[in-house]
Length: 96
Image (cartoon, rainbow, N blue to C red; front, side, top):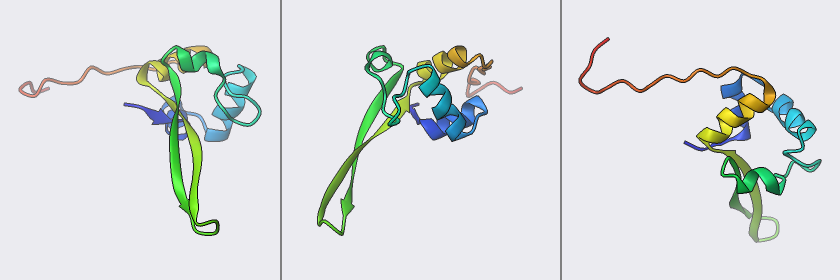
């Protein structure tokens, strides 16, 4: 499951602004909040292009959203020194 940075921050137990500032310190995001090319090519983080209708200009406005893959969330936690525990999914027929 891919998450935007807001949802990734919640998983890591951080506020959105705190995560973004720490990613700038690690030079994963630039000062404009855009993803630096290195992590994107490694398959952990990527930019999801989106658009919305702008009534004022009567055209679409295009923008990108920084997203993290599951591997990216784990990698970010390691980079930030945060411990993340994972739980294996239960089998459909087994009961606890």
